[in-house]
Length: 129
Image 1 (cartoon, rainbow, N blue to C red):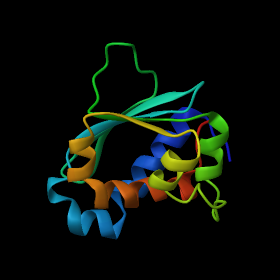
Image 2 (spheres, one colour):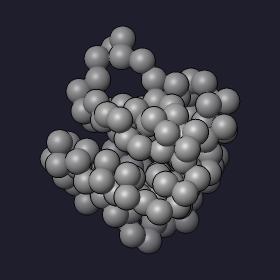
Image 3 (spheres, helix red, strand yellow):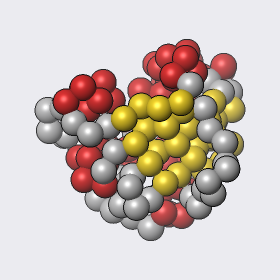
Image 4 (spheres, rainbow, N blue to C red):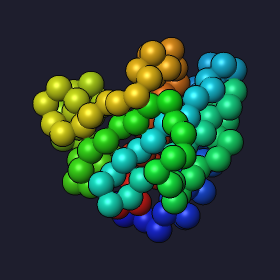
Protein backbone atom coordinates (compact mmCIF):
# COMPACT_ATOMS: atom_id res chain seq x y z
CA UNK A 1 0.00 0.00 0.00
CA UNK A 2 2.57 2.55 -1.13
CA UNK A 3 1.75 6.05 -2.27
CA UNK A 4 3.51 9.16 -3.52
CA UNK A 5 4.49 11.07 -0.36
CA UNK A 6 2.66 14.32 -1.27
CA UNK A 7 -0.51 12.44 -2.22
CA UNK A 8 -0.23 10.37 0.95
CA UNK A 9 0.25 13.49 3.10
CA UNK A 10 -2.83 15.13 1.63
CA UNK A 11 -4.95 12.02 2.20
CA UNK A 12 -3.63 11.48 5.74
CA UNK A 13 -4.29 15.12 6.62
CA UNK A 14 -7.84 14.90 5.29
CA UNK A 15 -8.55 11.64 7.12
CA UNK A 16 -7.23 13.09 10.39
CA UNK A 17 -9.00 16.43 10.10
CA UNK A 18 -12.30 14.73 9.29
CA UNK A 19 -12.10 11.95 11.87
CA UNK A 20 -15.06 12.30 14.23
CA UNK A 21 -13.28 10.76 17.21
CA UNK A 22 -10.23 13.01 16.96
CA UNK A 23 -12.39 16.07 16.44
CA UNK A 24 -14.56 15.19 19.46
CA UNK A 25 -11.56 14.68 21.78
CA UNK A 26 -8.76 16.66 20.12
CA UNK A 27 -9.14 20.14 21.51
CA UNK A 28 -5.75 19.92 23.22
CA UNK A 29 -4.16 17.42 20.85
CA UNK A 30 -1.11 19.51 20.02
CA UNK A 31 2.25 17.92 19.30
CA UNK A 32 4.72 17.15 16.54
CA UNK A 33 5.86 13.64 15.71
CA UNK A 34 7.99 11.83 13.15
CA UNK A 35 7.18 8.65 11.30
CA UNK A 36 10.60 7.26 10.33
CA UNK A 37 9.97 4.58 7.71
CA UNK A 38 13.59 3.91 6.85
CA UNK A 39 13.84 5.34 3.37
CA UNK A 40 11.07 7.88 4.03
CA UNK A 41 10.55 10.22 6.98
CA UNK A 42 7.65 12.59 7.61
CA UNK A 43 6.96 15.00 10.45
CA UNK A 44 3.32 15.59 11.35
CA UNK A 45 2.48 18.78 13.22
CA UNK A 46 -0.81 18.71 15.14
CA UNK A 47 -2.57 21.73 16.61
CA UNK A 48 -5.83 21.40 18.56
CA UNK A 49 -6.72 18.13 16.84
CA UNK A 50 -5.99 19.30 13.30
CA UNK A 51 -3.02 18.60 11.09
CA UNK A 52 -1.26 21.93 10.76
CA UNK A 53 1.47 20.62 8.48
CA UNK A 54 3.07 17.42 7.21
CA UNK A 55 6.73 17.92 6.43
CA UNK A 56 7.43 15.37 3.71
CA UNK A 57 11.12 16.25 3.39
CA UNK A 58 12.39 16.80 6.94
CA UNK A 59 15.94 17.97 7.42
CA UNK A 60 18.19 16.79 10.27
CA UNK A 61 17.47 19.81 12.50
CA UNK A 62 13.68 19.90 11.99
CA UNK A 63 12.08 19.59 15.41
CA UNK A 64 9.56 17.04 16.67
CA UNK A 65 8.43 15.85 20.10
CA UNK A 66 8.69 12.11 19.56
CA UNK A 67 9.44 9.64 16.79
CA UNK A 68 8.31 6.18 15.74
CA UNK A 69 11.09 4.41 13.85
CA UNK A 70 10.72 1.10 12.04
CA UNK A 71 11.58 -0.61 8.80
CA UNK A 72 9.55 0.04 5.65
CA UNK A 73 8.21 -3.52 5.90
CA UNK A 74 6.86 -2.87 9.41
CA UNK A 75 5.14 0.32 8.24
CA UNK A 76 3.59 -1.56 5.31
CA UNK A 77 2.24 -4.14 7.78
CA UNK A 78 0.78 -1.34 9.96
CA UNK A 79 -1.03 0.03 6.91
CA UNK A 80 -2.86 -3.17 6.00
CA UNK A 81 -6.62 -3.08 6.64
CA UNK A 82 -6.21 -6.18 8.86
CA UNK A 83 -2.63 -6.13 10.14
CA UNK A 84 -0.93 -9.31 11.29
CA UNK A 85 -0.59 -9.92 15.03
CA UNK A 86 2.05 -7.66 16.57
CA UNK A 87 1.43 -5.02 13.88
CA UNK A 88 -1.97 -3.94 15.17
CA UNK A 89 -0.58 -1.20 17.41
CA UNK A 90 2.52 0.62 18.55
CA UNK A 91 2.92 -1.27 21.84
CA UNK A 92 2.81 -4.73 20.33
CA UNK A 93 5.24 -3.71 17.61
CA UNK A 94 7.61 -2.02 20.05
CA UNK A 95 7.72 -5.12 22.27
CA UNK A 96 7.91 -7.81 19.57
CA UNK A 97 8.95 -6.20 16.27
CA UNK A 98 11.39 -3.49 15.19
CA UNK A 99 9.42 -0.37 16.18
CA UNK A 100 11.32 2.07 18.37
CA UNK A 101 9.72 4.95 20.27
CA UNK A 102 12.07 7.87 20.83
CA UNK A 103 12.00 11.44 22.07
CA UNK A 104 9.68 13.04 24.60
CA UNK A 105 7.43 10.08 25.37
CA UNK A 106 5.54 12.14 27.96
CA UNK A 107 4.03 14.09 25.04
CA UNK A 108 3.07 10.80 23.40
CA UNK A 109 1.41 9.61 26.61
CA UNK A 110 -0.43 12.90 27.08
CA UNK A 111 -1.90 12.51 23.60
CA UNK A 112 -2.07 8.72 23.43
CA UNK A 113 -5.80 8.29 22.80
CA UNK A 114 -5.89 10.73 19.91
CA UNK A 115 -2.54 9.56 18.57
CA UNK A 116 -3.73 5.94 18.57
CA UNK A 117 -6.83 6.86 16.56
CA UNK A 118 -4.71 8.86 14.15
CA UNK A 119 -2.12 6.08 13.86
CA UNK A 120 -4.86 3.64 12.90
CA UNK A 121 -5.82 5.94 10.02
CA UNK A 122 -2.74 4.54 8.28
CA UNK A 123 -4.98 1.55 7.50
CA UNK A 124 -6.99 3.88 5.25
CA UNK A 125 -4.26 6.14 3.92
CA UNK A 126 -1.53 3.57 3.40
CA UNK A 127 2.10 4.58 3.86
CA UNK A 128 4.50 6.28 1.44
CA UNK A 129 7.03 3.42 1.41
